[in-house]
Image (cartoon, rainbow, N blue to C red; front, side, top):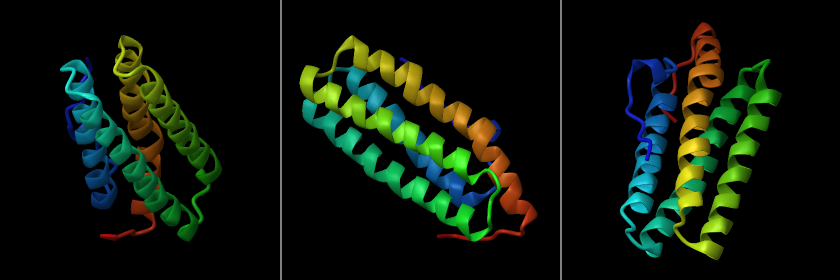
Length: 140
């Protein structure tokens, strides 16, 4: 299964967002490992639950600052967040119904990991540039 390794190409130039992305990457890798190693339903479910909660927290952080600074790309960015959350929730439902299947493993690889990498490298980097142009400094 795919694993994400943090490098500078994933940095948006805002420590707060980068730190949250690192946590998401760690947990996606944990999820991938748990499914790949057949670590049990409870471990996988805990990781999925964490991902759902942390994703809401992270997206909420980004969206709060988009609103605060009147980010012009906010509507599109928020739609992307909603798409990710919807797919993640669908994966949870699939997992509850079918367990740790090959389909779940492939979905993690092809959607969650690829989506996150592409989202960070294209959409979040633009948002990071915008925040830096506004002189954004924040730790919350």
